[in-house]
Amino acid sequence: MRLWLVLAFSLPLTSISVAGSNQFRTPSGNIGCEYQPNMDHRLYCVRLKPRTDFIELDASGGRTGAYKGDLWFPDGAPILAYNTSKEFGSITCTSLETGLECRIGRKGFKANQAAIQLFDQ
Image (cartoon, rainbow, N blue to C red; front, side):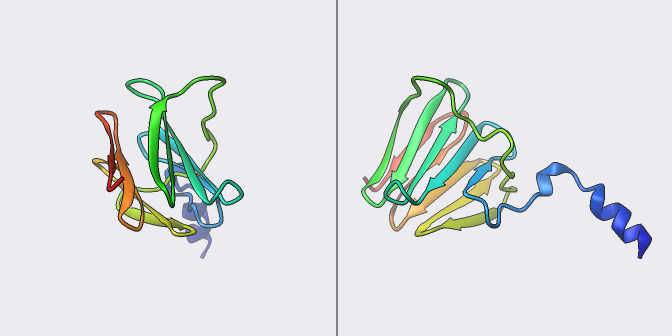
């Protein structure tokens, strides 16, 4: 029993659950997001590389552009592990080795270091 407790406390930070949190980061550390239920149930994300861009997703669809202003990024937020999904209201985000994919119905985005792709706008 004591051995199990030692192992439980030695798990890497990447194993932290995003359950109960409105923020998360991707395993690469390149994308961070926050679900904002008080802002029309919007998901707001920031991609750091190759340039700093924002991504928004709500029931009306997705938007993206160059980030301007003081940089916001959820540095201490839990990591959404690869091949794991999390629901935020009606938005579902899935962390894949090829990038982050978030959907609300048929609308959504896929983002990675190479590109941000909006779909069904």
